[in-house]
Amino acid sequence: MLKIAIEHHPQYWCGNFKAMACPCSVLVETDDRALADDVINAVAQVAWRIEQKFSRYRKDNIIHRINHAQGQPVVLDDETARLIDFAAQLFDMSDGLFDISSGVLRKLWTFDGSDRLPAQQQIDALLPAIGWQKVQWQNPYLQIPSAMQIDLGGIGKEYAVDRSVQLARAMTNASVLVNFGGDLACSVARRNNESWSVGRLVTGQDQPSGIFHLKNGAIATSGDANRYLLKNGVRYSHILNPKTGWPIRNAPHTISVAAATCTEAGMLSTLALLQGAKAETFLKLQQVDYWLD
Image (cartoon, rainbow, N blue to C red):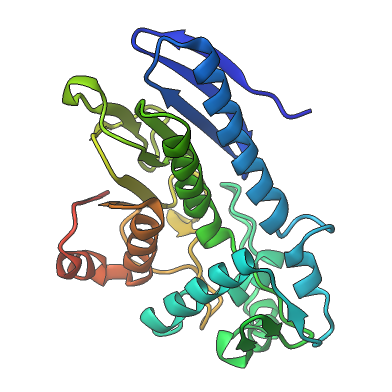
């Protein structure tokens, strides 16, 4: 059963639950327990709904229908179509490095901290099933080759954060901070112009290495702090290059970006990570606040 733990802190209520394979928290700056309960429960329902609808691990959602359509076109609803449009935009912006069809590589790569690397022969066998350019997309019809699969995990969590903040803003004028696995955004400024303080987790550390102070907007983080492989002293990030089938090389371990929305911040942090050694050069051109490790 899905559970939410709610506790009171000075000046705010905090709700904690799990969704999208990560810890999630909702902070509501109010003394009104009933209001806090309503907002926290509503946000959790948003997270669970989006997870159920777009998880590649389920057999009862739109992603499963797309991935098992055997090459036939699938009619998409408006919400799914918007995410597909966004994914197509990211594919173009990244010169093909952000590719939601690269999810098939997860059959070979399990980023559990072990030293198990797939063989090159196994990777080569999957590469022909990757490539968004092979997809036919004419809203609302999506048609992918029978051997291909899509995975919206690279954009789903940030989208869920933004939808949650949008809902919280409609429910209350109180400041609400939504934090899904380190991707976070707040609805409005706190009382007295105070900021929300959130610990920043980086690679190889169980405790926060620093603190984000967020007054408005959003921050998203990409990297291998929690998902990686380690062999012969080499750390392999879970961010894969769809053209080679191997993890991106020479990139910072962790990139955090601040932006107006979590979707925008996540887009920039992920695109930067895909640049490898040129990540910081890319971020400087975007003229945004960012943090690297």
